[in-house]
Length: 146
Image (cartoon, rainbow, N blue to C red; front, top):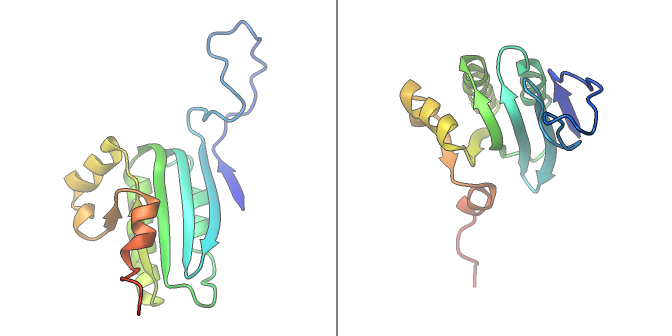
């Protein structure tokens, strides 16, 4: 599943335009969301800019139905370049909603600016934050049994 919110669309820039970006580059104000499942974990990858204008897509995805056997929602923010208070509030509300449903919401891969937002606001004390998706997925795997 792929969502895009807040995109500015193609402006018709010519090939010689220094502002021209590759087709897969994020445009200012754009938020990209992909969702996949690995066992009991739904991974929601978020990239671009999460702010008041682009937040509805993430709000919708995180409020989506809880699938059978879902134990965790992991929000991969490694490609998130910017997050404002609206985005932070969505993550905190989604964590609370998930907890009420018996599911943990965790965050993986925040860039320094996003990590600083979490620290300054105290969100890092309520959100379980992992350095990356691989670490997060391995976090609940204990040693292999005999």
